[in-house]
Image (cartoon, rainbow, N blue to C red; front, side, top):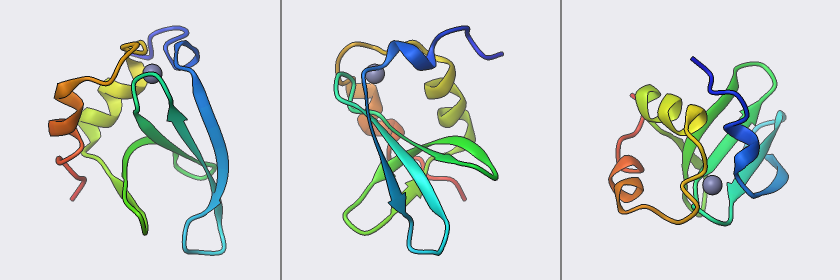
Length: 88
Ligand SMILES: [Zn+2]
């Protein structure tokens, strides 16, 4: 399922964030395609929409698609729609 090397094709800006709890997570932002992911030690990686106050977890199919896909190299119009599909 995981396409080999997809993750490393992005150009990451990564930072450790205290996500409103006592548990720190790593926020990865690709400055080419503008996608955002959170890496949580206990549950793994997932795609997120970044708002000012918190991470909004995206629906699982989008998370999977973003994680396994190669970096698009630019911000995609489709991503705007993807970001509105939040996990329930
Ligand atoms: Zn990218």
